[in-house]
Length: 326
Length: 263
Image 1 (cartoon, rainbow over the protein chains, first blue to last red):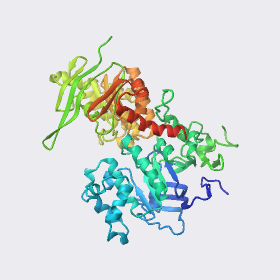
Image 2: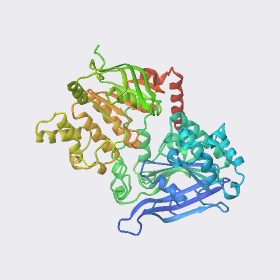
Image 3: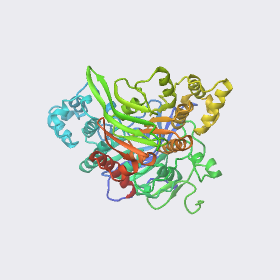
């Protein structure tokens, strides 16, 4: 069997809610201009656990998330792979699957009150006598004065409060999977910590499987059980979140070195040479090879192979392992 | 001891919002030492960008004093203002938004060289453009590209070249790397640090990321709700913050970092 990073049944006893196998998304797949946006993504989401998708802008993490709910932008098509839901889970966006996005101010409709907007997404059978449920949702996301917030328009709330309201809306359909796409990137650090804690609490209460999309490795460390690092549309390293302490892929190692730190010796930052290749200019072979400090000829010609570091941790790099050149 | 390049005294910046007066910066006093990096950190809405714009005389309703090399930039003659505009420059957060989409990189640099009468002949303009592109780590051939053909990091390099090519001594960088990817952020921060050392530039770095401040800033101001709540050497503030707000900021930031270290 071809080695991949799909760690099937790693933890026995936790319910797998959603499995993604070999997901591929193409832009204009039927035309001469076709582009690969995302290739060969494997994900397993489990109840009560958080899987993080990490990477820089344009690496395909948000597109992967959009594909889960069938919410791909116009022109993009899932042309490969399978998204399989566990039996009995309703997969519709807004029901089994809910999203929270980066900018709550953009997601909320400015001309309706919060009550209006959450009421609209409640399941039909709950709409008749909804007040109790609305107040419960507000309390769940940490509002002390549900009535006041429900009567507010988005502009009357701070960024953190808006994100709480978005979370209430996401929970309204009692989802099993929550996709949080850069949920705290637009927020100030002090508010960020509160929202992350709230996400953790909600996950525990509702036994949510969470897919957390972020570029912030600190957020991953604080939140995630598993991490998948993406680069230029592919996953390059996957495993338990602790892999970030000793990553094996040269890209992930480079990312960690590039990060300014608050602690430890104050040394010169080391960026990774060059920049992420835009769609349509992705190189042959390993997509990281032009920026890779250890690349060899074979990396320029052939796609990388998946190597197992241990039974949970895998890396897509030829320079790793027994037949590697470390 | 040399006098500081920039000395700000009791600066106050206000805006008129719907006939009401909003105070964006309240009674700010500080200095920027020559050849050093002064960091200004705070959360959104704390007034750090207003402060940055005010010290470059880009805001109208400002009171107090901004002494640049001994001259008050808020009360300048036209000629002095023109010279100040050459010596003091700014780099903004959005590298694409701050470049004219219809000007090639070479034309964007050539324009400021001509406006400030830095280069006297066409050949000289070309030579200087090539020299500055090389200085910021770009191939001179990029002079022939449009901004949309460049990556975010490359655009920010062009912005830095455009700011410095007129012989600037003072640079205000307002969140210069916030819009960039982590791997590219480090490149730009290192470039700014090299330029500080090589060209003897004094600069002000506005930002919200305290870890970036720790790597870049010599001195640091912490702002909250329009006021400077703490100031001093950056290492000292980040090591032993005194003000409760600085402590809260630092705690939130280092919470994530220690999660990362102690996985």
